[in-house]
Amino acid sequence: MNKFMKVTLLLAFAVVSFGAYRYGAAQERGARRGLIPIEPPTFDVQISQDSEALAINHVLQRTYTNSGIYGSFVPGETLTPIDARLTVVCPGTSGTCTIEADMWAQSTGSSSGNANAVCLYVDGNATNGCPLTGETPSDTSFVVNSFSQSVKGVAHGNHTVQTYYFSSNGAGVESYTSHYRVYKP
Image (cartoon, rainbow, N blue to C red):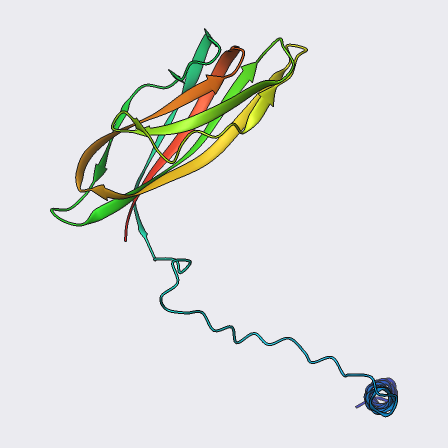
């Protein structure tokens, strides 16, 4: 070992030793002053097995992508389908599936306070409501509104999925993209 390596290792050992000494001395001084030492965090978190928060491992069966140009005005206070109805399959002869959708819509408006939403419909029914998730700007510039929704417990077989758009004062919807995924637990 050359001289430079020996000096470097000796210096590293001295720095580590001094740091350990200072850490121990600081712990002792805190205890003498009546300070409560802070315990390091524990990473052994116990979760009740009855908790609904536990995730179920799902296996992706298929992904469907539906995108295009809508290019029309959606009237205010009206839920309007913006993509073509698409048939997805929950495979198997028994059990259920989860259908999940990530939806985007590019739109423009001309009034302030023009709240909007994109929503998942499965078999012609809204899933989990349709919360307002964005607002079109009043200066007619474009905005992209997005939302993710899922529905659990869908029976095996064919189902239709579709993205709907809502605007409180009406908006021009230019384009859309929806990714629909089918999972089996």
